[in-house]
Image (tube, rainbow, N blue to C red):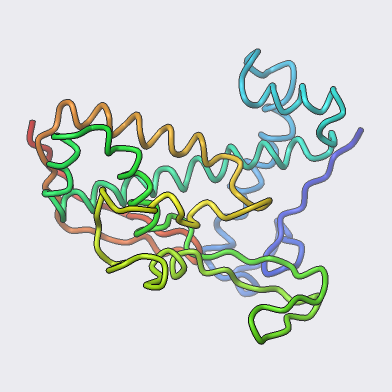
Length: 243
């Protein structure tokens, strides 16, 4: 059956031919790349091109069993392609910066590599790769003493929530031994939790496991943050490693 996926910007359909004036230079420049990803998900990352037993194949297997609507498969594929790419790259860059600025925390991983999963969560909490996202409100909903009417679009500030002093003591401190670091919202929550979060955590964990066995410390210099409306990561970072 034909499947159509629509990119959206600010709640409205995103026209591939939209002008710089209507979107802004950075967004307009990203549209062709986004459309390439959509085409890949719809034309290339589909049976029979998938690895048997792989995550992508399992999505389509679930659709054949009637567990997933077939028209949702390309959108679910995008949850592996996009979030587990940009966010993982930014998460790794943020980790390099944090460990360069806090060598004592890297020494803790050297002494106890079992802290690596906790360290991954602490990086994601403190420097959330996705800082904000919006959701469309389908029905009136009370948030505290504020009624959010149906049809509204609300902005969720993941980066701010992950530094909430009501949840974590001294929330701006980087601590790989922090309790409850896994409770961060860097991957969303509930039914909107990122499908690719398991892959992102795995990639970060495996990389840190390989590095901690070889690298005594990181020395970082000249960090430059990438300009992005949603993502938090590095445009460039000089890293010197000491074996």
